[in-house]
Structures are given as C-alpha cells and as structure tokens.
Length: 456
Image (cartoon, rainbow, N blue to C red; front, side):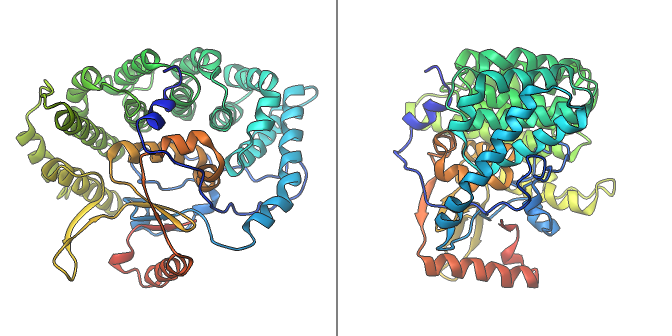
C-alpha cells in the first residue's frame, strides 16, 4: 500500500480515537512567545524518556525502561480548556507560519523563534487543517532553511518542525517532496544534530509521509551503511549520537515491513558487532534491534510454520547479552551502567523466554509472574507495550511529539494507526487517580516498585 503506516492499521484491531487531555499552553499571544524546546542531541536508548520541557525533573531511574508512562490528566475541565484555547493557539500558529513563509526583513534569530513557536504548537495540538491550508508554502520554506539556513540552530529547528508537520498532515506527498533534501542534509552537514534530526525526519517522511515498501527498504540500506561504518558513510566518524539514531531509525522503519527477512539478514551482523561499541547508547539501540529481529523471526515461524534462514549463533548471542547485564567497567558512569543493565535484562528475557520488552519474571503474592510492566497511560486508558515493534514506534513518536503524544493519540489518525496494535485497558476514574497518587507517593520514597514511572 502506498502509505506504509496504513499497513499497521489494516493488520491490527479496529481502534477509535481515545479521550485524553492536553495541558493548556502558557505564554503570551505573540507568535514569538512560545518557549523553544531544548536542543539536546537525539539519544536512541532511553525508553520513552521525554526531551521536552514538560519532563525535566525525573530521577535517574526514570530515564530508562518505562513501566508506566502517564501522558495526560483526568480533569473534567479538559474539553472546556481545550475549546477556550483553540482560537489562541490556532491564531498563533497561523501567525508564525505566515510570517516565516514571508521571510521579508526577517533575520535568522527571528526565523528560529518562529519555528520554535510553531514546533511547540504542532506538538501540543493536532493541526491538520491549518497545515494543509499552508502546505504548499510552508514546506518549501522549511526546506529552504534546511538547505541554506543561516546557522545550525535555524536548520535544526526547521528539521524538527518538518517532522511535526508530517505527523500533523494526512498528505502523502511528503516523501517525494522532502526525502532527497533530507538525505543530502544528513550526508553534507558538518553538524551532529543536523544529521540526527535529518535521520529522524527521513524516517517520519517514509513511514508517515507517503513512502512505500521499496522506499523503506532503500532507507534501511542507507541507515545500515551508517551503522556498519560507525558514521563514516555520512562524514560522522565514530559519532555515537548519529549511529544510535540510525539504529533507532532502522528499527522504527523495519516495524512497517511485511517481510523483514532480507533486511534482517543484511543487518544482524552489524547489530551484533555494535554490542561491543564504547558508546552505551549505541549498544542499547543495537540490542533493541536484535530483539526486534528475533521477535519477527518468532512471529513468522508461528504463523507460517516455516523457519527463517537467519545466520547467527543464538547461544553465543545470549551469552554476550548476559555479560552486558553485569557490565562493571568503571569507564562507564553509574547512571549508564544502570541503564545498560536494565535494557539488556529486558532484551535477554526476550531472547530466552520469547517475550516482548519489559517483561518481569518476578513473582507476585500468588506466585505468578508480573509480566509486562511497560505501559503508556493516556488519562483513563492504559496501553500495554508488549512487543518490540510497538516499543520502537512509541520511541520514535516520542522523539517527535514529546509531551504532546497524548493529544495526538486522542485526535491524530497517524498516531492512532501506529499504536493500533497496543492492547488497551480502560481504567475507572478512581483507579486512574489511585495509580497517579500511588506513583507520587512512591516517587517520593524512591521505591523500587515505582522505578521509571513517568508522569507528564
């Protein structure tokens, strides 16, 4: 099918838009008043850890494997607040787009501020109508800033804004309109963050912007070149953020393919080799992709009764994973060691037990395994993250939308399609509030049972 994201919906259960709440925005009505998001480099392995201003004060534990990712509140005033603020955010977005497209007598700092404001609004609101009304002017202007921005900050902000534009629009023209420029930016720029954001934008344009399976396979090949060459193929030698972002991108795009056998065979050796990387982010991202491949292998064999011809030594791989769960090198910070141990324990359990991410083999009071602990919470809806494919989609969506993921899950068909495989549990209001309050108490105690619970 032309648009890759549609395959996920066709192969999954029917889903409908869910009720969730978006936090009202703050700030003045001026189009330049929206706060600019932080410009941290892309990091592949953090399990749904937001880089947004909405999620700035979590403990070290809360930056790795997420067991409860709460993205919205439950106020009865949610819809009223949203309606009251519609005119304000809508007008602000339009003002920023129109001024940016006009570009007359506007310096680089002003363009960057306009893009920051638009990016913030596009993350926290579903703006399909506004984007579609300005698509033919806005996208070329974004590409101009990507191609010849006055400085790195303008280029990076244009790339991030383009990612959110693609997510907000139902247009299938983005791949053809943007991919060549994004690939050129990744190859030619001397800036690390331009390369990482270009990779994310290429992945979003391919999966959500009209790419087909052949386009996806071509992108997987390009990303694999980056991984195999340790970044040399895009003039980023031994650059951890670039390689780890390429690994995340490979995993995200691979989840949309019906047949992963050939790409998996091509990539498996490179992923195993990256387990020995000196960069923890690269190691973890490689481990997640190995888990994805093994998950796809299991599903194929269960459905078809046939074996994948995948050339790897499972016993040797499990032994290597087990060593990573106990890595004790003093060259790795305590925080990174903890993340490495948690991440590879999840991967190891997946390989040994045939489970998805975050599966706990610990026993409850009834001597039953706790099972899957990773969840997304949107108000009174809890989604179990029980497959690596789903986990990688969530990871990439969070890269683009950050704290705005909840509102897009509520309204945005593209986000709903990508998360359509998730098992949804509807929580009663009392239960949802109880879980939120329980989290707050446990977080204060820094209890192990509250590990990685994220509340937005």
